[in-house]
Image (cartoon, rainbow, N blue to C red; front, top):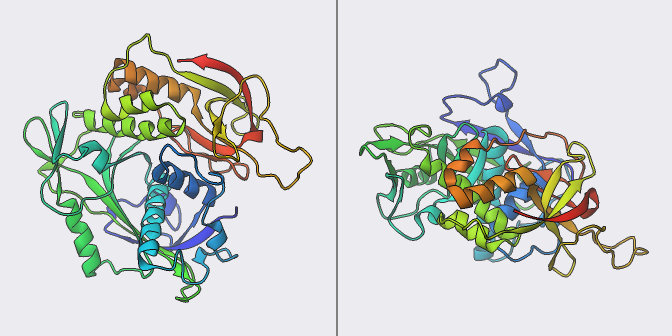
Length: 384
């Protein structure tokens, strides 16, 4: 899947990331970015799907067939869906994937947790004395995020068929969402969280726009002092735990997933069975991952000591099965955190960004990987 270009507009950025500079020492931002559709789908898959397997194949961006065959990100016809409700829902889901992709690729955000998960239906939640609370009725931002430096940020994702202006009523209303979240330190001081609004405005054949556009703004929540991930790390740890909870639910390890999401301790005598796989292709050749593959029937299948079964080796049109996994070291850290407490996540270092990967293989800095099962070889059953 070749990358697709989108127009980029930024507003209120105090510091411009190096990847968005027009030149190494420039203060001007680039006016367009390219999105790798495999990475976009990786974020979409981790954010949108629950425990049920995707259909038909998580390594294939399911909206690819709705895109115009060009270097620009443009949808065929009128876009995704015919009814206004269907278009709105699909636009929201894909907008969230673009938000995650942009923050991951350009703003060093590695971990994402839906705010609703951390509040879990309550007006407030406590993290070692730190309070996360809704301060007013109405919509709140979508995500709490943590970057590789343990900084916590807030993100709001939007998808639309017409780009908004930064001074428009829509952006003013979206900024108000950040005013409805408060983070209060154990001392009682309200801490300010940096935030991001990421709107993706879709281009379609019918609206005649040349390409889709990302509009990104850099607001913040109300507060008296900047949030300190070093002094109050519990919120950041909860974000990381929630992030991995969603991954392990997709790897069919429900008890580990629940322990990380709801932050309860698992006894040492309970073990988790995984299949260890070796990756066969650079840049991960020889590295081990834990996971399994999705068969064409939609069931998860894991086998040790042999290659994945092929229904009909003579059928060159057969659909490849897709491996979904996580780096073995990351999985071991997550299991240790579920047994000994979330402070174990403090020793977890995000993976190095991989700019060039074989076609069909996607890898995020959280250690998760999606790709053709032929790129991996099952080794053995292990228990963590």
